[in-house]
Length: 114
Length: 113
Image 1 (cartoon, each protein chain N blue to C red):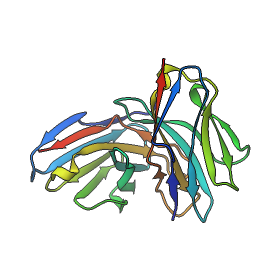
Image 2: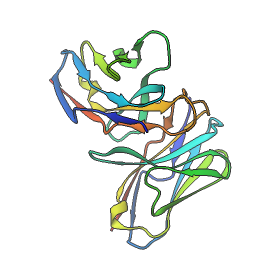
Image 3: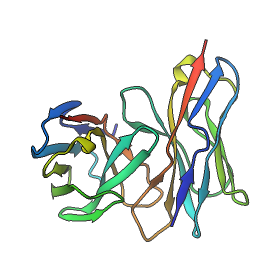
């Protein structure tokens, strides 16, 4: 079975500071990895995903994530955050085959302070 | 642009009522999903469907059923609503491949009194 752990439930950060949101996963099989963002009162939308190839993945709005197979991590980073990045961020995994199910983490609430 | 719409943004129901939540997608996606979102618990899968009339239970199917009579429409049914089903309900759809992005609707916030 797969599981996803987002260690930080809330992350406050000042505007223009860098941020890292942590995601660790557990799986005995190969998985695809995703980061989704949920702005207030909206559904989730895809930020970026890792399928294969380069372990550094760039997404929308200046976010990037690095896949680390040995540490089973997929941390999300942004070098300089804006007030508009205030949102909840979800890490998710999906097996290469055998199921249509995604497994989501519990989310990290990013609060950008002026 | 992919569009996933949900029939209501906010819904208030009484305990014991039968509740229907509707979801429609316009991208001809094979897969459709229903999640509930609760603070501190993230998204939990209730049911998903990989084709018309096909469905599989997710992680928390108890108290829910689903219907998919047409490819674009996926309904979640609460047979007899209870207060512990007060939550945010999110619908999503995707193409069949495991690498495919899920597209989410705006959510329905359900309050059961």
